Image (cartoon, rainbow, N blue to C red; front, side):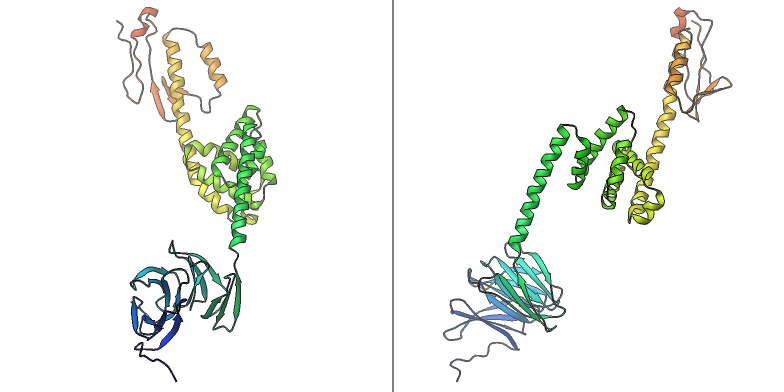
Length: 395
């Protein structure tokens, strides 16, 4: 015969849990409530209200005076046993939460749900640290080994799964990766200090450091330009790069090309790539490269237009220097020698006494050849599109 009996809930009771010290009993029901009872006489100790659907599981902590509940409303809740208030709510499951357990020293929770997922939660941060997917249906059963080194789960897919704690292995892997990065960064610094730029480039790419790659490429290009090698060194690197590394450097170029000050390096790098690898091969064998080059093209056109305008505007300086030489009454031999050495792309053209600069800009000027050298400072030159010709006032 039952020693004690009490009507605990208005609907089905899904779970009964006993506190580690045997002082309290917790029950969870489909009436959306969890209740705490004194184990000695089944008198009500407190009611945990807050869930919007039935409570499927509840679990006491063996380290703190708290209890965790799992509900069909897709949430977990942590309650204080002192005043039965909710201190934490965990959201992340896509369906109802069916089971919950405290892990280790009580600083973490692990839960299973109708979405077939197992989630690990950190109580202090209120965040999900990991999600495990090993079942194809609802996970009704969940429990831990006494030393919390193994987790066992069973689901509606008729499978039982055993999960091993790999936290230590992951921490060791992260620590090894950090040590490796520190070592590689030191090697990168050493190569840069000794001006071993080609070795530094490979290390910077392996570390995925775009800023360092840009600095190294700048040094390589400056060194090649001094030796009249063009982009020969860059071509050598392109030949030995894997497709993934090639895509990586082109993505860097796409970002660098958005700024005018870095566009020169980006364009030279792209030139080295497209002159070594045929366009057809880039489009077919290197997945994603056409899209990257399509992102480079608009900014490249903008930079070339800017350079064209600068070249056109530079002829104004050429004409000004030529006019200054004419005003002084000296011969133009030195200017003609300088103009020939400058290798102008589009040399100035004279038409009807006017000089055409940069294709469209017209600069007109007229000097008083009859004035002596003392009055040359009073000559006036008009520059622009005005129809009024500059003339000397003769005074």
